[in-house]
Image (cartoon, rainbow, N blue to C red):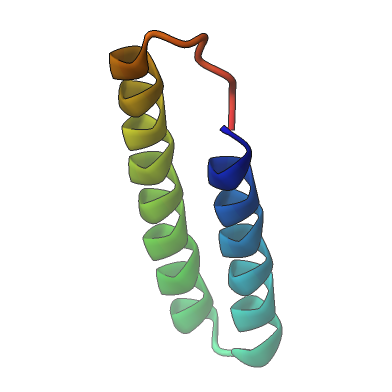
Amino acid sequence: MRADREIYRALKLYREELLRRFKEERTREIVVEVFDDVAHQFAMESMLREDREGGDVDEV
């Protein structure tokens, strides 16, 4: 789904912006962990939604 890809791209951009802002290593690690978890969950929900709708599952 195009909207899902746009949301995923926005999440990645926001993650990169936070990494630019935070310089402390532990804070950067937390940002990466949280955003990687969110991105994974978002991708799984997107694939499940596509599967329920009977469409092909595109990689996000």
